[in-house]
Image: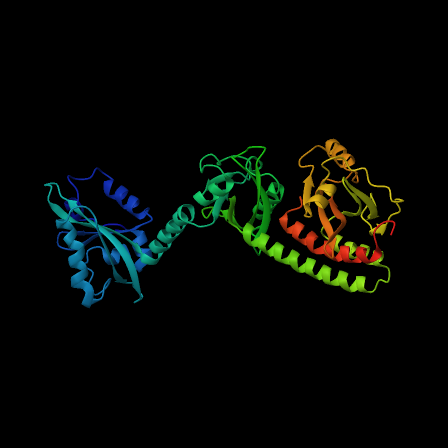
Length: 457
């Protein structure tokens, strides 16, 4: 009697007599179900009660089967008529009916359940009873919430979500992540991350491997990566900063935690990080200008004051600096008066050129700067090391030069010359913000040089 009452009631719930052993087989099937199951005949008598129903409510099949209705034991007497009426109404309604109500456990507690009920037809095709399947509502709600959360993350989330398998390859991606990676949601699946990202992929893979082995880190990580434009084009990269969180995924069905992969959630914070870096850079450069002014004020020699200004300006800004003063205007002739060492970075010092103009070729940025009375930028771009050295040598710059920025030196309405800032390989090109900084350094240097006098004065 663990699942049903062995009486004529069972015959009423199905057409014909069961085969020998059919009742035992039915009982075994019902007891093996994960859902709580019970059944009523047309008079409301309990005919079936499986082990899951016993677990949820505490009433055994022997105590439940054969009772008429639920009043006085499985539901409160005040609620019994309404609940039983709702359950038995399934005999006259098509399909399944879903209800939520409280049942009473054997120890007197109350359990809110969600119950699905449907009619059972007899051999004559007429309703002969009702079968019901029920579960605790909180368990159902937890499951629905988990499913809803998964669907929301992969459909509507405003940040990237990627499930990475144990081989560190994307298994599932949401729409936001696919857009960030520059490929379609299906095109990214199963591909190595190196096919999708340029710089920074090693750091990302290292983080994913660590999570697989050790678990999630305590705080999000900010990863700078280069996204391949067009899903793998070699000539297009866009550098992005992704604030990333990681979750180790393990199978809930295994006794021992079996890694399924890593949940990687990320949000693009590139603009915020660039703004933060620019603000920090501006603060540092402003402090450098202030320190330079104080140090230069202590110098008795105006030329020394000019080179001190450049030493402070170079910190974090450029690798080398050259100072040329105007020795003739038609055409523009420039004479070198100060420079940093051509090798490793060092202090800017005066140089003795005996008034001989530097042999700058036509179109050189330094004479252009004087003619335009404004800053000029130049770069070797993505040239090979050999071509970059030839490019620098042709412009009379140290061989390691890759990027240059020339700013005009003006004082009291006169153009005195030009200061050239140089960067080596591995450094970014000079941008407009760099030109603005150089244009704020140049007048300070020019004022000191004006006091020192032009070459030959």
